[in-house]
Length: 206
Image (cartoon, rainbow, N blue to C red):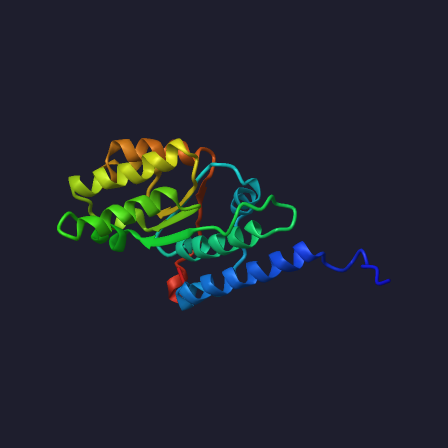
């Protein structure tokens, strides 16, 4: 009778590896080319990935220090961790990524109402939401109300958000409105990570 070695993966581990690799391949295909290169992550970011709590992650710092690249790679490591054998299985994750300008445009009131409502619901309920360069876009009062719907639902259900921005959460009121800014500050808690260094756009992705 064949007996499995302790070093051989179990059937569950093999299944998780296959599912995880498929998910990573799909994620990589949607990741912008310049952000596909693996980079060393800040220890605070590693700690956030390992924590698996409801806290959100806020990456801030000067323009060009690698916030967006860090966020994309953080999403990928988060996805890898989702399929770890020692983590209780809860189905495949729903991970959504948006640049703030694209998101705000999609939330405008002149678009199809049904499509906008579907988008808001998806962003309320997805397992992880990544919004890039949040302070770059100018939001109307209407858009701020839609952002509140998204962030408030994620806030009360402890669903994490990864945000990149060149200002702190408490300084976002003019963009997101004070209610979103307040919730985001609490959602991030101690997971506000300051990245510094030179402008990577002089020779690499930022």
